[in-house]
Structures are given as C-alpha cells and as structure tokens.
Amino acid sequence: MELDEDLVAQPAMLVLARESRGWTQADLAAEMSKVDPDGRVSQGYVSRAEAGRLPVSGERLHLFSAALRYTPQMLSRTTDLHGVGIGLVHHRKRASLGAIALRRIHAVLALTRLQTDALTRAAGLSGENRFRLIEVTPLDTPQEAAETLREDWGVGPGPIEDLVQLIEAAGALVVVRDLATTELDAVSQWVPGGRPLFLLNSHAPPDRFRFSLAHELGHVVMHTQPGEGRRQEDEADHFAAELLMPYATIRDELKQGVDIPRLLELKARWGVSMAALIRRASSLNVITDWQYRNLMVEMSALGYRTTEPGVVPRETPQRLAQVVTRLEQQHLGQDQAAHLAGLGGEEFHEIYLCASRSAGALCSSVKP
Image (cartoon, rainbow, N blue to C red; front, top):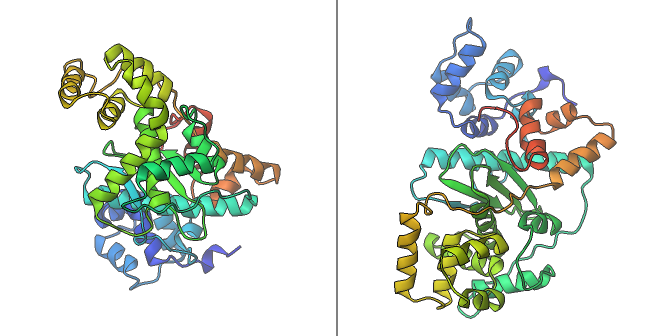
C-alpha cells in the first residue's frame, strides 16, 4: 500500500469527486475552509488543482479528502478512468433535469463503478455473465429483443417476480442509492470487458423502479452506440413493456376489462404501475384512444397520476452485500471494505449494506 505522503491527487479524480457531491468549485473551496478555518481556500486554488497546474499531496490532499469525503487513495487513483466524463451512459430521466444535476449523477455512476470493481476484485467475485448484445433492426424489434432475453434467461410467460434478482443472477451489479433528485430514476453503463452496472434512485416508487430498471436493461442489451435520443428511449420503453408485460400473456388479461379496480388487481400481479398498464392496453389495441383518454382523465381526477394506490413490493439488490460478507469471511472487516471503496464507514454502510438489508430504505442520514 502506498504511504500517504507518496500520494498525489489526480486532477480528473478531484473533478469527479466534486461533481459527485453536486458542488461547484466555490462550494468545494467553502467546504475545505470549514474543515481548516485557519487556511482559507479560494475557488482559484481549487480550479488550479483540478486543472493539474499544481500538485495536491500531503496535508492539502487530506484537506480535499476530508471535504469531499473520499479517501486520499481514491482521489489519487490513476487506474482505469474509462467512463469518467466519456463513454456510453444510459439514463431514464425527465426533460427538466438540468445539466449540473446530470453531471453529478454521471460522476456518481463512474465512482460507483470504481468502488464496485475494487470490492468485487478483492472478494474474487466470479460467476457467469449471461449478458449479450441483442441487435435491433427495422425487422428485429425491441419487443422481440425482450422475448429473446426472456428465453435466454429462462423466464416463463408470466410476471417477473423479482427483476433485480434476475438481473443480478445474470451477472450484473445493481446499486440503489439516493441520487438527490426526483427527476431521474435510473442510470446504467456496460463497460467493455466488465459487468453491466445499474444505479437506481431510492426515491423512485417500486412500480416505477421496476419499469425504469427494465428500461435500462433494454438500453444495455440493445444500444452500444449513441443514437438519436428519442428513438433509443422509445425502443427501451418498448423493450421494458414487453419484458414486464409480455404480449402473449398480458393481452388476454387486459381483454377481461380495463377499469380502476381491474388495474389495481393487475398492478399487484405484474408489478407495474396502473399508468403503464393503461399504456400497454392502448399499444396492444385492447382499448380505444377514447378509452385511453378517459382512463387517464379518471386517474388524474383521483390524484393517481401523482401517487397511485396499491402496493408493489420494493426489490432490493443482494449481490454487493454478499460481496461484503465474503470479504468479512476473508477477515476483511467493513472498515477495510469501506477503505477499498474509497469511502467513510457510514456512507459505505448506507450505500452497500442498508439498501440490501433494510428493504431498500436508507438507514442513515449521510448527506449527498
């Protein structure tokens, strides 16, 4: 292990760490000044450090570390920075999400990948990676891609009981954490040679959570190159709808009637929102455009477009918690595991243990 005095911060990691906290350079300077009131830090100093115009080591590195809440070792990483500000990142977001917030989430994704890579390598995580690319063409539709994936993974014709477990069993890593926004539910990335990584927002309601995860799964298996944004988003939506509500089974169930009580029954059975079921009924021509509009008006009048009734169990990832348990069995405690991930113990526990052991709920108040 490198001695602290030998460590020098990497400018790209300083930028990444700052953006992951949602801070400007002035914000970081203010946080550093709080940590060390006797050594006031300016925005200009932070700017020069991030530009690589001055080395950051020793006490100054520890000051950055204390303010940013990442270890000096994490801030000094020189290995694999693929995906830091580049690469194909997929996300299901609302148009109102601003550029600064999106940069923050991309930074969180990149750091999460570095953290999970370190943990899984230390634990010697093995197992099959059953993900493969499924080509979509004018003749091979996103719906057919979803059918292919169901066949590949041995999924029957009915509802998927636990989508998170299915994706983890196929070899991906799933992390649920507070993304400090309600404007984005999920983000994903599949780096060549690695495992797909899905980052889910703990604020998303369980029914929307499942659809967003299925949407990201569609991106990961269908889209390897940036494309026309709306087209790829529509393809991922079509994939998700077919994956969670397969035509061969759902159509007959929708034909039995589509009203509010029936939608509540189907929501409980299929684990998707009532709104998603209405859209599916429309896309399969089970209901007319007039019926679709009336149902949506009724949903709005009842307040269901904001908060739907009915309970969908919250799915929680287990694989990374199992990785930490495996590290403990190898006599590497949680503090050491947190150090591997470049985090303090409290934040590490919240991200990698609480989400698995407390039904997806955050069990401490670590600030973003």
